[in-house]
Image 1: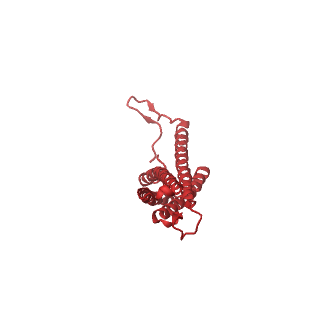
Image 2 (image 1 turned 60 degrees about the horizontal axis):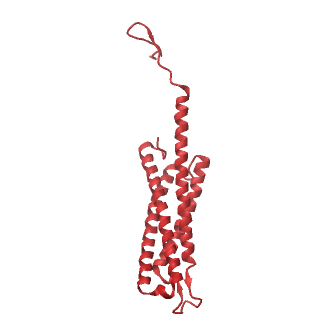
Image 3 (image 1 turned 180 degrees about the vertical axis):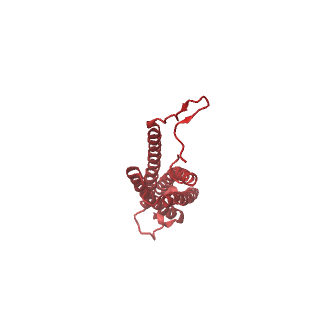
Length: 204
């Protein structure tokens, strides 16, 4: 049996349910959309910064060489002569490519309002890859820092100062890329938590 929206109160009068303002739900919906838009823009900014610093680090390392002779010359130094520098070059290049993909995914989400992949796949894809690549980049930069210090302790940089300076710049840019990738990882982790709690990547 359906109940009438009008019910008698204790005094014998008619009690009418208080109407909800028409614009209240629309207002909350608009505020939620604006918050989600700002959140996505913040992620996009961190992704773009990680891309720029990682790409710059890779370029500095790939272009890092000293001496015009062949690789067999003792005075010739190349980045690929050292395992740690090869690790830095490859790691920063991979992170730059990954960040470029994530930039495209963020632009797609901002403009279309939906994810490139299915939502559950996109949420876990972003978080897991952010974690893996951030750890990889930190490991590479730590190895590059240790090698740079070793080269200076051996007075290698005395005769090859330009090579060492470019190596230091590349490693420093790699650390900056790691920092912004870590910020992105925190935000993607927040989206995972929201998805687990609310069934949506957005904070309600």
